[in-house]
Length: 157
Image 1 (cartoon, rainbow, N blue to C red):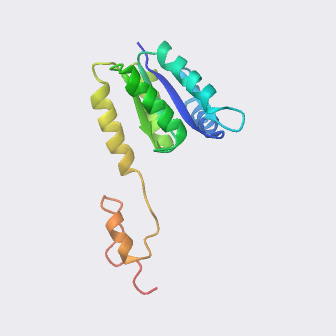
Image 2 (image 1 turned 90 degrees about the horizontal axis):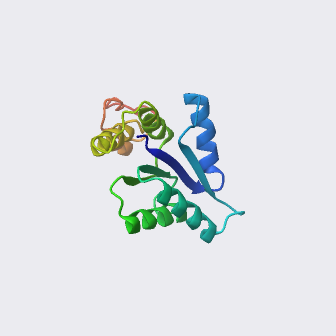
């Protein structure tokens, strides 16, 4: 059993992420893009996502922005359907999508393991977000992991 993955977002963002994943992974099998753009009404977008979720009991959907229309529509549908193996991850960086995509393609993601895999993947993705250079000591609080700037960062500027 393979989880089906979808990317939803504004404009051509989903297609752009698919293009990046194709370059990095070599394939986009079991990966779907749903654009909400000037050519797609909210009603059509909702219908497309609804069909995708009806056809795929095991699905992970990545949304470009927390709280944006693609996220809201998809989250509402997932919550309404209440299927135990459908998830939405919002504001997902490409490295998170790539990691979960590779695990799904390798058959590592199963309904029995999904909760632990998602928890671990989200934790790892949060740790990859960086802000460089830290020129202002106020920003030092943002660097709480191993990539933190030295205490004297920005001094002498």
